[in-house]
Length: 344
Image (cartoon, rainbow, N blue to C red; front, side):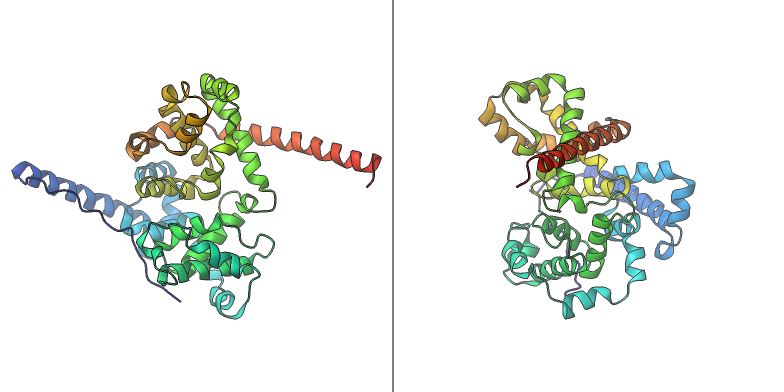
């Protein structure tokens, strides 16, 4: 099985004139990055030995540093620490290899057909049957065997594909398990169960939040008959890994793994707020296009994420969750009574 870690290819910028000021700035930035790395290594400790103690002692410091972005060279290990997947890996030696080599899955053909659609423009996944596609197949197949109730759904490929850019197959598999089974935060498996029940709940919550925070835009969406399933489903199913720029997706994932799904709501609200004045003037067709193709300046992490952090949604999300469950419970009861009254 492929164990190689592959990072995003580096784009070479156009040549620039080098002068003393540029050199001193570069040296300053280098020193700043070194100080940042030292702080992170002190937080983590050898092999992660200090991490849990540091989080207990200084949770606000950890949260602030994660929101600023995890250093790329430490991202793989920190993701495993904050997701709880490292504990799962250590408690289940040999399980991943067993799932990949000795088990069969009813989803194998579906996985093979979908693999080329996950990150088609990333060099790691472009080669047909190459190391990237093989690793992605192995992780998805292993999960479909590990959790036969959920099995395999196409959106999982974007989650696993992003993880494999930073870690080996076994690490990526256990992180996927931690996310879907809820090792630290609420389980995500409802995003992929039949009927996509968790997607429906999240879209209900997001629509209400959007109308409360951005009432003018909410009214315009009503007039143009725009509902959140037309633009927001992929945000939740892939946690912005589907079509968002890589630097932004990574910063979102840093926070997502530590704080949970509320960052998806916050980023969605920030995107709509950032483009609010343009969106409220667009008719249906142009509105749909704009909601699926945000401008480049809106995708700048240093602009978008501070705006996202300004939204306080935790309490309201919990209230809307109870409202949704109550509403759906009554709907289910009504359907059950109809069946009893009018049996097939």
